[in-house]
Figure 1 (cartoon, one colour):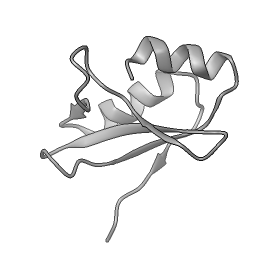
Figure 2: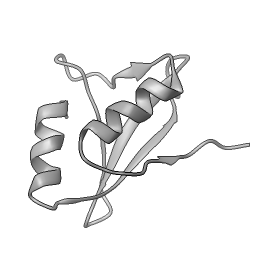
Figure 3: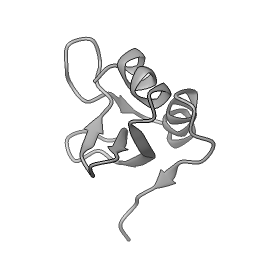
Length: 77
């Protein structure tokens, strides 16, 4: 889902959490959002592919643009 749609969902109070985690497909980070129902919605580009960020700080800042004051970094060790 694109950023503008995610922001709309946030303002309707449909999202409960922002998550940044390593991409399984590319070398970088993806941003996901958790709904009240537990559904995970990935942030996508205009063509519908998961948007991958090379920099953790930029991925986190993008999640914060939606409105979340804090973002969970989910990195398996």
